[in-house]
Length: 556
Ligand SMILES: *[C@@H]1O[C@H](CO)[C@@H](O)[C@H](O)[C@H]1NC(C)=O
Ligand SMILES: *[C@@H]1O[C@H](CO)[C@@H](O)[C@H](O)[C@H]1NC(C)=O
Ligand SMILES: *[C@@H]1O[C@H](CO)[C@@H](O)[C@H](O)[C@H]1NC(C)=O
Ligand SMILES: *[C@@H]1O[C@H](CO)[C@@H](O)[C@H](O)[C@H]1NC(C)=O
Ligand SMILES: *[C@@H]1O[C@H](CO)[C@@H](O)[C@H](O)[C@H]1NC(C)=O
Ligand SMILES: *[C@@H]1O[C@H](CO)[C@@H](O)[C@H](O)[C@H]1NC(C)=O
Ligand SMILES: *[C@@H]1O[C@H](CO)[C@@H](O)[C@H](O)[C@H]1NC(C)=O
Ligand SMILES: *[C@@H]1O[C@H](CO)[C@@H](O)[C@H](O)[C@H]1NC(C)=O
Ligand SMILES: *[C@@H]1O[C@H](CO)[C@@H](O)[C@H](O)[C@H]1NC(C)=O
Ligand SMILES: *[C@@H]1O[C@H](CO)[C@@H](O)[C@H](O)[C@H]1NC(C)=O
Ligand SMILES: *[C@@H]1O[C@H](CO)[C@@H](O)[C@H](O)[C@H]1NC(C)=O
Ligand SMILES: *[C@@H]1O[C@H](CO)[C@@H](O)[C@H](O)[C@H]1NC(C)=O
Ligand SMILES: [Cu+2]
Image 1 (cartoon, rainbow, N blue to C red):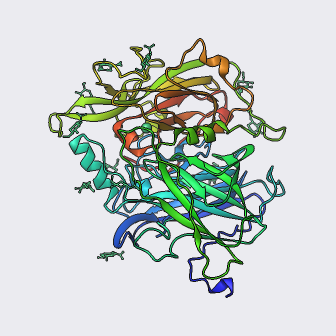
Image 2: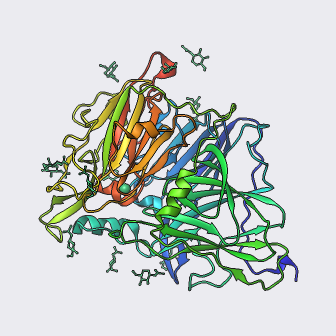
Image 3: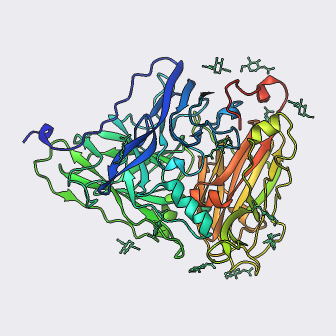
């Protein structure tokens, strides 16, 4: 039987012909749309009626202009996750940080230029829990005529990992905030919007299918767009070569299991070098804290060889157990910047601001909550209070009373961070920012705490890439830990997991003026307060200063 007669959903993402550097216009209509998953139909907020949303294609150097029109009943903003936004902080997107929401019936034109970046990133809603369904890929091709620093693949495909929620995600988090307890978990994982062939509710051939030709090589652009879970990704019978993460090239290495945290992206080369057949693709959770509930329904898809004989059996993958810390660590430890002549790693060698932020949970009194207390989260014991005016406007126009600049650069009360925690698990609250002069070089150690329990936190910094110079378990030790730092070819990225009961050290140069959000990319932790922002001063002259806001910037 000819391959064309396979009764499957064909998804092939052909690259649009992107010619010389230019302006790329996109229109994002935010609309409700019904989708059927897990045997029932639900209306979700989408961009252009798609789940996942449309892929935004551009080349390095392009000016990207996206008109977002809000036809939904929710306030919306869009964040271009990982795009540096050099001198364009107004277009970064996090609600109440760089802009007020685009309210129902309103629109806003995002306008930014992609400079010095190429690879895969993602865009997503950045208000409440809307990013559960409001998300999609950003594909940045190299400048015309510039090859990849690895063998040119025959074809490329975008693979978005996410979650399906049976109920409304806004209701899920609102219920949790009322009770003071942890929110419900999602009901299934998805790959390109589908649960796949083993979901129990769909036909055996449902879901995303990547059709491959024997002997060819495919570039898969993987994105974890899930709200609350780190994911392992596998393709039965195949190994993958990792070539890029968070739109930064890495030294290629081969693995059978990827780990991708929410907000991270990973490009891999897949060689169709196995016997003609069908192979299961899986996205399954990684969590090594026994206290944390996860959605254990694996998202699935299929790699299908074009010359497979009908009906070919599906080869299954061995899914890593949820608590496979060694598998996760081995993947993470393999990542190194490419650091070639063409793509050097400019790791700051001298540190102007040496910061240590604890990241973790806490418990505050709440008379109306189930236990008389609520679970919160914090950085350096500050549970961030969201303002009702956008911080960037407040900064630019010198509004007083919106935020303070006294975020502590070190824990005020040092303790054994990875021990059982201080006897009082309470936190402070406030809209406290940390101020940085233009071009300051920053070392930031992010230290998990054991308050309630150790847990990993994928921390995302807006406006910058950073180098992950160190990572360890237990407490960071300022005298011994730095001797093991990698200042030569550390991985460069925008989101990195602080390991449960451990720490990471990152470095970046504050060469982009504005107000830049730093937060856990587990949406539950962000909501609970695991967030803060840096305010970065202007430098000298217009090339180092934030221009005035655009005229259509939404008002609060
Ligand atoms: C979605 O489905 C619901 C109930 O199944 C229906 O009432 C509603 O009209 C549908 N909405 C759209 C936009 O199709
Ligand atoms: C985008 O910003 C650039 C630089 O400020 C400006 O020249 C251009 O006109 C803007 N484009 C749109 C569509 O607003
Ligand atoms: C959360 O899960 C509980 C138990 O399954 C269920 O009763 C409740 O309705 C769920 N809440 C929401 C908002 O989905
Ligand atoms: C997934 O979790 C549910 C509820 O906690 C449990 O009943 C089920 O056995 C778990 N399934 C797997 C495959 O671990
Ligand atoms: C809150 O109450 C639930 C059940 O009512 C209990 O399992 C849990 O341990 C309590 N949590 C805290 C932080 O007190
Ligand atoms: C805000 O204050 C700074 C420092 O005092 C000043 O340079 C700047 O012009 C003020 N900005 C506005 C918009 O008033
Ligand atoms: C911190 O707590 C951990 C876990 O209880 C323990 O193993 C470690 O020895 C403690 N460190 C110090 C310096 O007390
Ligand atoms: C955090 O702040 C609360 C409230 O001020 C305080 O009670 C607690 O001791 C602080 N904890 C730490 C570790 O600093
Ligand atoms: C912040 O803390 C103060 C004093 O501890 C408390 O009265 C207030 O309700 C808290 N605000 C929020 C938003 O949690
Ligand atoms: C920023 O600082 C670095 C290191 O001191 C220096 O090489 C660079 O020229 C500075 N950049 C600007 C724009 O001032
Ligand atoms: C600002 O940057 C532009 C373009 O890179 C350059 O031509 C110009 O000389 C710079 N101006 C200053 C004052 O440095
Ligand atoms: C939408 O945003 C506006 C401006 O900040 C705010 O006043 C309003 O309460 C928000 N609406 C909802 C439903 O949160
Ligand atoms: Cu977290």
